[in-house]
Image (cartoon, each protein chain N blue to C red):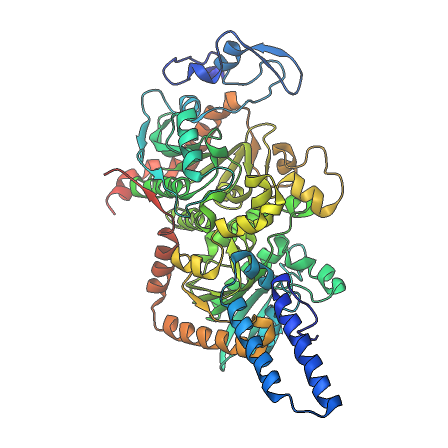
Length: 291
Length: 322
């Protein structure tokens, strides 16, 4: 646990412009004012209240993956505009704006790396990019991440955060749900674990596909997790929603998730699970390799 | 129910012409004069108008037809296409879902498993059927029946017709997202042929939850979409009156779905929509199911599953630098 008491700060991967230096951030739960640099150094967790602000994909990789072991894959996958979609703005413009804003090509970074020495196929969604909605690129990167696990005999760890399917790609987005989930059937057959980590927020199409299919499902405290949006539910059922509705705690109570794990303990916990679930494989590695 | 008793806005010109025709017929009878030429002219005009309306429908007009209160539902087709349909109830854990029905029966003497989302015809029926919006137990029942079909080698026919999975408090408590996700994962490896037909509304994940099939067909005026056009308009336009534009932009109509490679084919409807001639529409569906089941039966299980996976694995459009 003390592994995370003093996280290292790297100016390379945490972009300064995300949080201007010298600013203060207010905790939405306790109202406490935190120096933004302190917050960053604490992996965006408010020290006293324990409130978890979102992490971007780079920060998440830094948090989870052993230093110097991450190797990005499928980095050049880029969204196109298959529907020539135009609402108030065009999809093409939206993509460009989000690329400029985040310096990401799309909403997922994936690759291989180690978690406490255990090699994993890893993917993380970045909510800043169009709400990390799942279009063709997100679906393809998640699918390849699962396939890479099968190819290399690595467990798969995916950190989700998403508003759902990407409307700008219409039905093709919907089909990414089938594609990612179907691929997990084969991972399962091969006996490799999939650990699904749900962060704030993980909703709709992502939740109704791969994110719900972990052998283990772990959530960060207070994360909003669910299928339908709360406004839609309220309008449909015309009654007040429970206070903790669609929170990680609500889902733990209702039996979906295995554990709620605070961010500062997340890497170690996942490491422990991987050691437990990969024990047999790691001790019969020669047999597996000779197949 | 009289099929003329419910008129969509874009069908108004036809109603006016039909009224004119009736008037003229009456006049001809009461006055005793022959008005055959005039009557024929109006009848011709009606046919022309019909053609020009129904062969140039906008996506939003098609959505309206897909939601037409007289549109045939799953049980209507089941009654016409299958013999000795035996409905099976319940997910064996929580309850039975009248919005997602299933059961065994015979199709052309061949035993099959049938699934379908089911709407109600009247308000009372709709309350019972939850307006065709399944709850988690519906998807879990569907999976139970698909696994049953697998054990007894029954091909599966699924009729898709839902505005979406139910957005409710209890649906969330019982993990509607997980129920759908598990179906997506399990359907890909069900070892019997699966043919799905979108007969009305293909509402997002709720539709896909029984839609991971070897062959997916869409009726001419049905739609299949990641979100309802209303939902899309209110999110991306911030204005629900932009629903027709959203329907257009989403490319949710059968011909666009085919062009995007998401479906295998379109089943033609009678001019005016499926409800104007349910028998004829059922026959068109029957021919497609018959043809596809015969073709799929010839495949080995390994080939069947490999092709099903390859189909969904290949979906999506993106670019990648070499």
